[in-house]
Image (cartoon, rainbow, N blue to C red):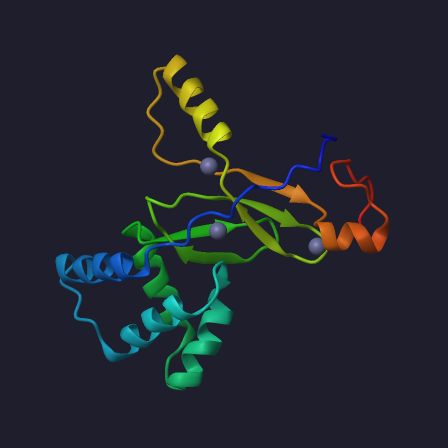
Length: 172
Ligand SMILES: [Zn+2]
Ligand SMILES: [Zn+2]
Ligand SMILES: [Zn+2]
């Protein structure tokens, strides 16, 4: 198989939304947070939208339900959930912070297309095992990690005659 032809065999497992929802409620209780109506709408929308959502995107779908919700409320809620480990904050180098539901039981990493911005998730047990071995050799306890591959997605490659797997030297 040529380099770059490898596609993940299966997509990552989707997060177990019901369990995450229960964890979220527990987190709110522990922190003594009364789940205000606005916060409830934000969380409902977070569970409804696709992954890797920006504050602005989330705000838009929240406002479709309740136009009174402000940017700061969404921002604070997401910071809080990130702090509690319930969502992951992702920065893919374009200046936006994106959020996705965190699920310790369904880890995945990302391929990021620099041309169209498409974010593809992958799960590769071989990589996970390799890095466990590295950590072990260094007596290192891994709490978190991320793999982010930046380049050109298959769609964009098709349109611009870029061969998958090769380094693209110039960006449009
Ligand atoms: Zn990983
Ligand atoms: Zn692309
Ligand atoms: Zn993701």
